[in-house]
Image 1: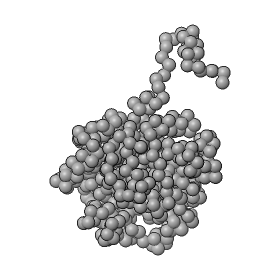
Image 2: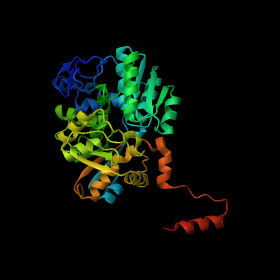
Image 3: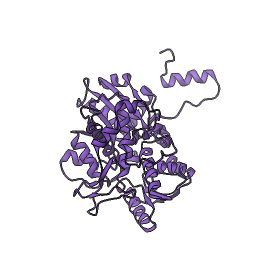
Image 4: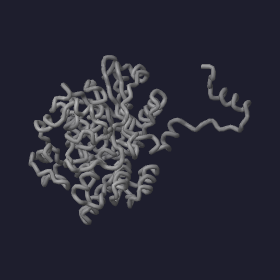
Length: 414
């Protein structure tokens, strides 16, 4: 790879050749892929990018750690819509607000970006089997992307994973192991199995290439905004890989001169599981928390990508905000009613965080914000129904319809 220099440990600084099966440093630190920006500048311009017809994450090949001969993965991953939402911006008291709906990826979450990268690197490594642990979205995205590429998958999920996500896994033909325990228990079992059988490792805290796939969400945001940098980008945070990737993409664009400044990040976590935000707020080292939130995709009490995530928040002079499950579900309904975007609880946590920061006066009328919705609401319809309630159910009778409207205070003339 002419565009990649090496993988570098974020803890000790040791460098490694960027082989397809690269994992962690011998000191235990996570690696960061380091690029040759001078070379990339000779290969990629805004004009060249604008002329490309391909509308997937692979349109940014010069900024991705893949061989020139590596083919794009089969599913259409990336180039999800970025909607400007003036009505929601007005409700929140913001100057301008955009919503990036990454729930429109093939398996309905941002995690498709990481899994597509994992499949590409597994192909380069000549692997036939990929495995991972996941709270749900990474699992379904890996299973779907691997199935399309003809690769076998072994997926480890905690037993609390929503049925919709497990159904995806089974439909995609994955061998699914439902672990009776926490995400930490699930991760440890997957690690032991991967080590035993030598499967290609898709775990985000082990494989440094996955953040490189996730970073394409920020590359798209900036291109879709015509390289005009917003004041803030908000995203939900679990194990830390996504916010780390988001920041890496922004730094890449800054390094090659595509943007002239960097936005501040907003790290949104659930109150019931916020070890990374707590570390930022207190200035102390992070330590484990219970996984006490309905936002299952970010219910990670032992974040495996803590170093990169904390670095991203601090380097961006970012904000941290914790939201209750009630605030998350209120944001889900608000997004639906004002934007027509249906996000799962973890997917809308970034928007819930933006709403709370606006209410607190931390961000406001002169600020521009992008909020990333990381997963589709159809993955967890049970909680959506709890938040929004059941529909009106009556026989086919006009008098009963009028009575139901009256009881619910519905004014059809309004």
